Image (cartoon, rainbow, N blue to C red; front, side):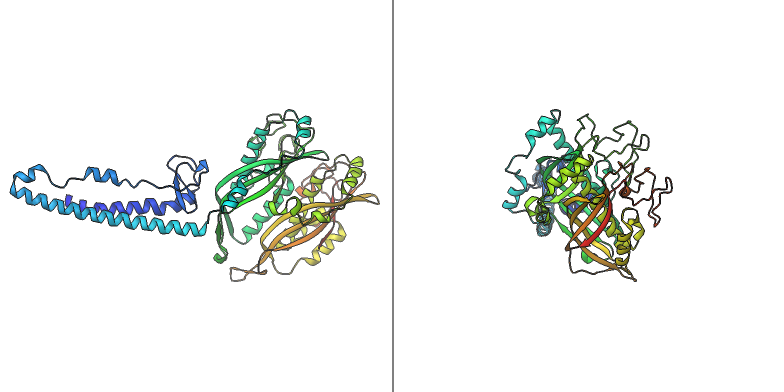
Length: 524
């Protein structure tokens, strides 16, 4: 190619590079989700801000196009030799015209690129509108009232490090968002209660059946502040107020019309539990890969049974570190709860009476088992497999649940457990009985024979349930959890089967002698 031809093509080439750099790369960077390097850019209300994405800044900014450098190298079209020699002078005039034409092409190329970027940013702003000033203030400002119960907690736990705990919460938050995106709980299983694990696992199962993905990106945590320290039986509980925002992209392979994107700020309350006798030993359940008891390397994927394969200790028991046991949306927390008005006025007194006979009794543990059972019952409905709940329900309830399982598949396009609240506890004959209120949002969908799916509900519907659990008054402490596919009498592994006799010790699996068994389940 001749030098002059190459020179004429250069502006168009630079314009194309500018379009690629300022336009297309914006989406590519967002999808990649990279955080770090100083040259990486972050989305902010449809614009890009040069700098590290890990900084969390959302201010508008611009990128340098590099035009000043280009123009300094090619300014001054004619040379001094052109004025001395007439023939060269004519060539100098022609060169000046070429450079002027080059400048015009460059201006057009840059103009097209800038216009494209502006249109793209306006499109992004429409898809992800920035939060209002009121929303920004609400989600970035810590709760006005100080933490409840902090002085008493610090007096009982002088070794507690608030800074280390806050860092642990933030780390857990980020890891769980990543696990949700990947639909893989192996990296977060050690610090999830069994009930929390089952909630996530059930939703992943539904998303897998419906071929759905939910990618969370551009995550920003504005604040994570403990707001309540309390005692619950054998456990300490800390409720943490978390304000954050993230890019939320939902896709459905079977029905693209369900695809959606958002970037909304939100507030959640995360509840962490730990055994009251546990002390801060330096072990970090969120990041450590070794067993807190024997230091052996933990399995890469522990699944439902969060147990060390070497010393058999339950890693998420709360004996070693703080475990996430509950996530509650702001609208459902405290006075916003739909279940709280249903709580018995005598609940506190009744719990104290039960705890006097059963030292291992805990409201949080009962609620965790109830939420675990609820999600597995919903899975049984969706997969039409009653065997999956046989081990932890009474014979009478199993007959009732089996009769309600539909003949056709009714998978949940959405299923979220909004609340799980202990309503009442008391003694009935030789057993203790707990009534737990559950409120869940769900939307049913059916798979079509030719592919695709059909929504059976117009939208997510919130439904309320009551689940009843029973256990013997003089129950023997369990050696395993039926909700984790373990025999509560011997700890042996149990599969999904209609046979309720343990193959190892011969004990009836759904016996109230060792474990809380579901005896009632009804929609309110």
